[in-house]
Image (cartoon, rainbow, N blue to C red; front, side, top):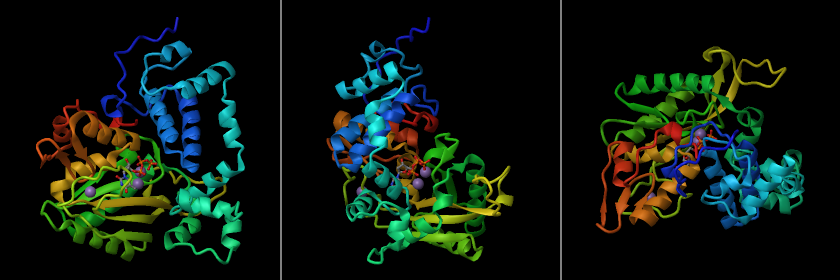
Length: 369
Ligand code: TTP
Ligand code: MN
Ligand code: MN
Ligand code: MN
């Protein structure tokens, strides 16, 4: 028989669950993610989040859902999510999801938001003006593209293609070499999806800092300059630090943090990658463009920045929600603030932060919520 072994109660908080990259319920979570995205496109935030939470719960299960009854003790599953599960169990697919996938508005917003620099607001504006394809957008003289969007279109084929682990490693070597040449004792750490053990990503994320406080921003600028001189910098959106520690941690998750950072497009040569580049058939170029994020927190904010940039987004959202609701603490990418004691809690490592929150430590590869 394949009766699932009953697990100890599953927490409603992703930060109290261990979620590896092995998803035993992909058929359901893929469907939930389409529904969540469709609600996001229609700015129905509550339902969007409900489906994201439901997907995250199913991703954490060490077993596949085979009967609806198996989900009865799981948190975050409402009537709507259960109806979708039931539909998929019965017919192997969800008709509601199929209807969304064939919807012109959904398809168009999905296409437009796949461009680097295009968010839901912009995609929606273009849709309302009757634009339906990239050709429509590029042929419309009254549309002003930001520089980021211009480069998004220019490198669309490359940066919409997944980055492999081997490519991420090759980029790591290039950035590490640039960093070492400038500041031998600098700290460079892989974050984002690749730190969580994902095999593919949409970009590669790094934290970069210096042991000496206050030197990190200059280091980031020097690294960018060096990449430029090596002719591998295809695009750079640099954002200076706006860090002000008088401000309390932000309550809203999606708010950007205040560290110096840059969103880059780098040129990666095939010869630098073990194996080969991820490429479409028939593409014989010797290089591809890859999206890279470099973030430079001051060393005394390093642990918070590392935790915040390691993701997943759902894991981060629930860490903040748990801190606020269960501990009366505010957590963001910079700091942890105890509202009861009215003080900031220091941390040198991620483990310190979990300990302050009274949470068991969750390894990066268990944060794929
Ligand atoms: P992403 O690179 O967007 O996501 P990812 O690395 O988890 O997945 P992918 O393979 O698709 O790249 O973001 C990494 C983490 O950084 C994510 O948890 C959210 C966080 N983040 C911030 O904290 N602030 C920001 O401004 C951005 C862009 C991301
Ligand atoms: Mn990433
Ligand atoms: Mn990123
Ligand atoms: Mn802040």
